[in-house]
Length: 573
Image 1 (cartoon, one colour):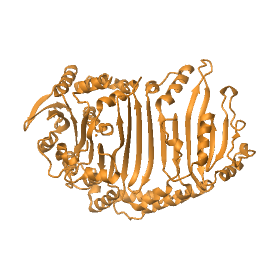
Image 2: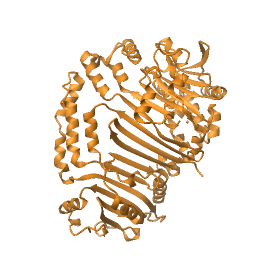
Image 3: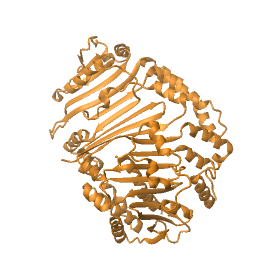
C-alpha cells in the first residue's frame, strides 16, 4: 500500500516540476484557478503564463528524453495492479517524449499550457490545461486494460471524475487517486475516507475557498519583492508549516494533522505544541518565512531552450544576512561562462571576514535563550563548539578572496593499448589581495617549490619539473601571478583565460558557482572507459549525448540566500 501511495503522490506531484519549465501579462487575480487555492497553502507552484511545451520537448536531446527508460525494472517485477497501472502510464510518457507533437497528442495538451501544483493542507492538487480530454481518458483506459485496475466513476456538483483505489478494499481507511477534466482543465488529486467532503469540491473547482492566494496578493507580492518575471512562481510557506506543527487548528494543515493523529492515537508533535515551543518556533519562522522561486529568463524554440531560475530562502534576520554578505568572496568570470568549458567550479570566501562572520552567526543563534526543549538541545550542542577555532587554520590564508578551477577542454587518445590524456586545457586560480606573498609563505612547507621565483611582470614559469608530466601527454603546466590572481594553467586555452585575469578586478560577487557541459565532459570520458575494457556504468551511457549545459550559483543579498540556476539544452541534430 505504501508503494502505491508513493506512486500516486509522484503522479500528482510530478506536475509540480513543470513550474520550472513552463508569456501576455496576466495578473494572478485574473486566473480563475486561483480562487480555489487557499492563502494558507504551504506549497504552491504555477506556470502562470502559457508554456511552449511542444517546443520545449523538441529542444531536448534524444538521449535526455529517454533518460528514465532504465529505471522501470523494479516496477516491471510488481504484479500488483496498481503498480502496473502506474507503470503503463510511465511507459506512455516515455514513448510520448520522442517529440513535441507526439507528447501533446498523447496527453491531449495544447502547444502552450498553464499548470498548477499546490496543496489543500496536506492533500496535493495538480491542474494542467488540456485541449483534448478524450486523449486523457484513452490513456487511462489503456493503463486500466494493461493493469487490471478499474476506476469507480463519480460525480460531484456536475463534475464527472474517476477514482482509482490506492489501498486494499479491506483496509479500514481508503485512499484514492481522483482524475477529472472540467472546463479544459485536468485535475489530479488524492481523496480519502477521512478527508472533509469540501476538500474534493475545492480540488475539483466547484467550491471556492473563503480566502484565496489572490485575496492575500501573495503572487504579486513575491514578483514585486524579488523581481521575477510573471511567467511562473513557486513557494514553500515555512510559517504555515510551523503553524501546522505547533497548533491544533491554526490552519488547514494543522486541522488535518490533528485529526490524523487522533485516529492514530498518537501525536508525534505534542511537545512542539506547548505555548513556549509554539512561540519560539513561530519566531524563527518569521525570520525565515518562505522559500520562493521564479524565472529570470525563459527562451524556448524547437531547436534550443534557455531557462534561468532563481530560488530565494527569504530571511528577515538582518544580523545573519549581514554576516553572510560579509563572507562573500570572488568568483572569476571564467567560472561563470557556461558555454566555453567542460566543468568549472568557484568558491568565493573572504577569508579575513569568515571567522568574524561565522562568530556573529553563532552568537545570533545562541543569543535567544530558548525554553523549548528541542531548541535548548540544539543550543547546548552549538555552545560546545566555536568558529573561533577556525582562526588558527585561516591565519596563513590572510587576504584570500576565492579559488576557482576550470577544465576548458581535454582529449583522450584512442590508443587501445594505453589510452591516456592527450591534451588538456585547464586553469586553477587563487584570488587574493597579495597572491605572490601567499605563494612565498607556502614555500617552506613545500620544498619542491623552494626554487621557484614568480616574475612580478605576469610572465609564467614552467612547472613540469615540479609536476612531472609523461612526455607523450604533451602537456605543460605553467604558473604566473596575473594581477590579484595566482594562476596554474595548462594549454593555449588555459593561457588565454589566465591572461584575461590580469585586468580582472577582485570583487566580492558570490559564494559558490559551478557549471558543467554534459556532452563535453562525458563523451571523452566514456570513450576512455570503453578503451580500457571496463564496463560503462549504465547511468553514464546516455550522458555523452546530452547536449545540455547547467550552471548553479549560491549567493546572498539583503532579502535572503539565493540559489541561481541556468540550463541550456539543444535538440539532437
